[in-house]
Length: 98
Image 1 (tube, helix red, strand yellow):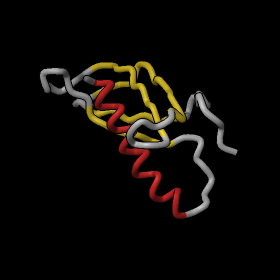
Image 2 (tube, helix red, strand yellow):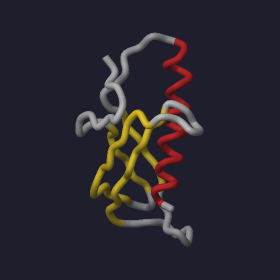
Image 3 (cartoon, one colour):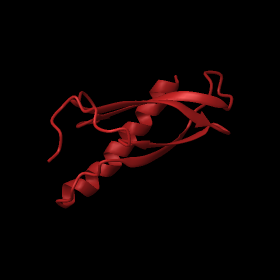
């Protein structure tokens, strides 16, 4: 369940970023911040550490995987987490942006 929520957050970030990138030629950032909420399967707030898996696709449905990263031991307080995606370096399965 936590992975599904994280994947939805990543997909939302991709959709939000795609509109601004499509309208202007801007360099692709090396990293970006991402925040979210994690709840238990029963809906209760989660406390502790979590591994956050981020996947970015070129399309919302049936897209090609462009980037993947797993960030281990992310502190979660009051169900909230904050990570910097891309800070550990590239782990892209597809072509690396120039």
